[in-house]
Image (cartoon, rainbow, N blue to C red; front, side, top):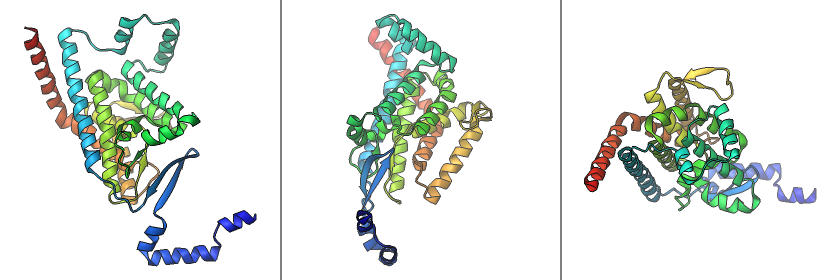
Length: 318
């Protein structure tokens, strides 16, 4: 009891300190220059309130990853089209070895849940692996460095890797449920390579959006597939606005993708304006904006690039 009294200020002292800090903003900022966040009991980050995020490195990383992802996807799709070998994870696995009995069991279990798209299955498996890695105490430091994006850090790799990272089971379940709802439909339209490129680009551009937002607010520390998911939602809404989607908390109710997108965008806009910090609302809006812009404007340029690669492949074969 003595230790508790010695480590916590009295009510009078706390009130005086609060009044003094309110009258002296500079002193208040200096006295609260660091902050410690805890995620599921883990001491994840220590940041400076006064530190202003730098935009050059995140911008270069986001543009490099997104451009490289789509260029690589266009080349691989052009190569597969010329070889008349449609890409699928199942075909690649069969080329190396036949499926074992346990893989047949897992595939049947996934089919029962409607997860028939192999690329979506791989993304869910990657998120599951990272989710389980958070449960290993020896990996806590590694996970904090590379799978949580800190807007004030000079590390840019977490802008991408944090998109695979979930700590709480509810966060993980919500994102994977949403991905399995409309992800396979969009993947069948875009193709596996273009779908993965859209995921990666939406994730890093969502991280870039929250870095920009942090210039006008306190630093953020984000993780989760939500930025990539919102990019997929935006593109899927452009292609299938009237397609039905289930609600996570009310699975017996269905709504259209358009209504779901409008509702999510409204909540995230209010969250940014009101300064809510429970979710990365700016990252959601950044990913959503890119998904819509890609489907409306950028996708035809991707088609031109893919056709150019096919021409180059044909020329080198002659």
